[in-house]
Image 1 (tube, rainbow, N blue to C red):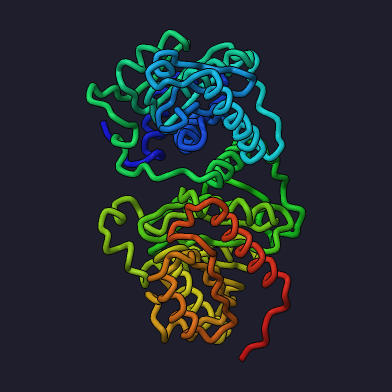
Image 2: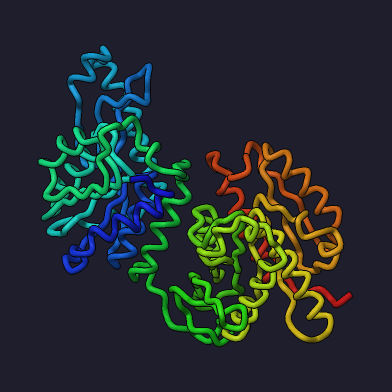
Length: 454
């Protein structure tokens, strides 16, 4: 059994855990890769989500080879056999452990932001990872959960080698594993997409779960949101005269200065971890956000649809009109990859309608690693919304295309280059830089008076 990605694995795993819904479970994900899987499980069960922090103890000269793991609460699991074969002595162990304990403290601060752990006492706890290799980290996580007072510990993973599953089974009350292939060399071989999970994605998923389960406590509208009730939750967006309904996630805080609509690209979806991380940063600044799928699953199967920026822009325009029927808040766009071209085309259309007195202009646009060139120079010249183009310094081809697009724009615009970043902004701190740039651009232009009509 192979999985498309961690979202797919989490949804499949959730199907095997439905019988725990009535047990009021708490889902704990192992950062980083286990959290996207755990989020889907928690979402399906309507359960709260937290991280359970453990760190692999790696052989000093071969860090990928783990001889044990440590977890919160002073829990340590050691493989004496691997220590002996790798000639790891007590001094090596102490040195590696000190370094990993410091990383545990950093992760706790980074992921929880100072919030305390969700209490485990008396609860059914589901520990989730994206797969098991040696089982040391999962074993440590389950022991931590037990030590913290969990009444029942369930370990749920998409894939594991048979011997590891047999070893760890007796340590938990229940082991749910979708696949135990006999020929197993690494967890990643059982995923079509096993790209690295960023810290920002973990933080975003924890915040999103907190909102979904009531942890953020949104209030009803105080009258400052343009007539739209303050809310967070799923929405269905009608397009193509109602023939197609696109799923979305809307966050509309009371007193928001505006709302940012995300246009995903290159076959991504509203679950894009990078866009979700940016959305969390914008929500923290008091802005509303709408993330939605521009294409249905059937439409995504044809890759040509991903690059059909004209039809994508028309859908974005339809969704914007739907949004304006529900709120009077200013609307901004955040586009990524091909979605950036769609956002700029939709912004050009909005500018023309506004010039004819038929609608409102878009307040501001931000592109992350986008392909604005796909909008065409003639359409870019018609955009009036202030536009920020954010590109990674190591994404040389896209950077050159953005320079050309910036030259074609006639509106206020800026090209911001994030040093050391590649196309997906996977390098540490680079996605945070994108979020900071986007927040400053949107809040600055939402606070500024509208420019006079030219």
